[in-house]
Image 1 (tube, rainbow, N blue to C red):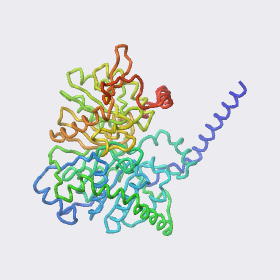
Image 2: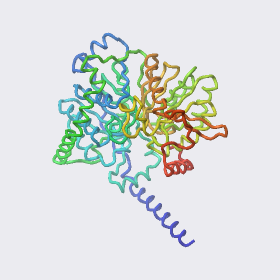
Image 3: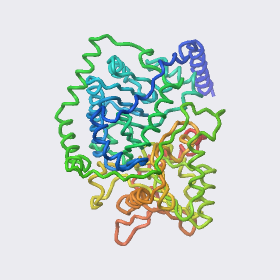
Image 4: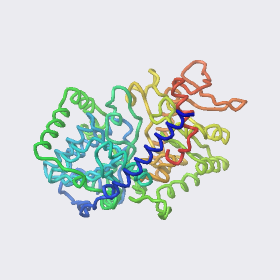
Length: 520
């Protein structure tokens, strides 16, 4: 009893200290003033290499947007690197995560080199994943042609004070910018699920994400630019220069390190793989063939997504009616799939009208966030009983899978966020089917209504759902979950979370007891 009282006193004292620290820092946590308004530069007919290359294509497809699916990580890296290399006017880059690893440094160097050529570079990053990157962000921002802003940043940049500020601003810090956009010269946009880092570009030797972007050319790119400007000029986008500074010598030293690492032997080996990618080969042979359609839109949440807003402007208010209106087929790809009561009801209603509803998501072994898996696990049995087909990506692709060598490292994790309805209408972007994407994060993506694009996305779903890459779930007669391993002959029904050890299964089970679904 005495020990319990001591521990209770310690916990209460710590909580009081944190609260007082937060109150003392009240002036420190107030958001900094926003920067000067900035807007996308007007496109010109033949001002840059990108303008000139696209002119004949755009003239041949008036009013249409060209689209290329980027399912392969090497292609996705190549698309960003090529557009940065050829940009002559502007680069507008917006990301949730930009990792300080080989891929991140290579693309940072591409952006810096563009600025050296006179290209205006604007970079907007969410601050939650920028911890420890301040020296590099400030070094980039010091260039006269680069401006870098952070979305909803912590004012205190040192770890101890950051923790106090997180407590003080707990209700507002949970709102994050999850958008991903790479826009070059206002002519080319890459929109989808990928952040910037090795795991997103098939560069990590241990684990790679299965992801998807769309490369867009034409009218829809202007929509992406308008969205970027809305975020850039919002009160949540704070110039990184207001949060600290670096002297010229420190900036020079940091940038020399980035350039040195970007030219390392490992980077050269990776760039050789990129040079052999499908996209680079198609460019070299002048065989790149975008699909052109008048029915492509870039859409996003408002920059400030607060509970008191008009929810009709939120992305979920646009996506949910699309899914509920499906007639024959719904195919959802969502790495973090926590449908909630409303999502479960929606999918059940669609299925009750005769549509086949199918979902590919991560297995426990493949999910990089175990707590999210626990939120999903609550709904599995009910979804199956309602007729929803569930597939869970394996943590490791089978060696004989034809798709495995191109897309996976030693471990795999699904990161694609997309759906296709009735084979024609669809979405590719950053939006997960979970409470965080619906209510807390800002999200962005591409809507389309086009049978060829629908067919391509449907093919991607079916590839992910193959036995080599996923388990299919079912319920036994007594209501217990089963995972069908179709790679064995005959197929084997597994009775517990596959490829996950007892410790990981126990952690996921405990996480499922916590009242945290709204934050998943």
